[in-house]
Image (tube, rainbow, N blue to C red; front, top):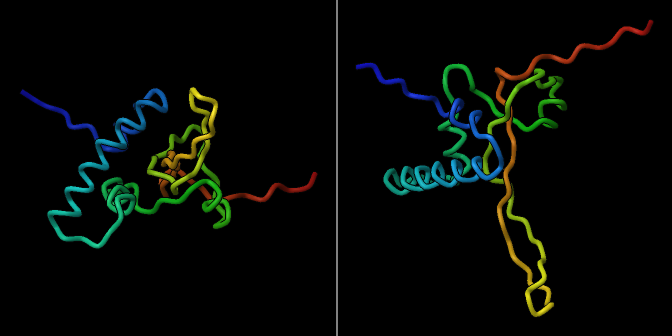
Length: 125
């Protein structure tokens, strides 16, 4: 019997919505925490997540704007990888009408070297 193992890239790109992406990222983060603890690593969860995404094809990861600064554009149709963003602060109103501050991590989207191509300058007509 043959079993197929989906890659991390495939798992990420198969997520239909933000909720699925967050669920997958939570599970992957738990794996990353275990790797950090078992190996006594001095790394953050996002660093381990990026290492988990790295393979023979996907070797370097940057966000959209970082690639643009380096002279690249994201290929049309490319689906982003995702990690946790920096901690954010927000305010919500409680049932009693009071404002309550809370902190959370959102998603940050990354593209790999395999998903970008050099920018080309358009010639003036």
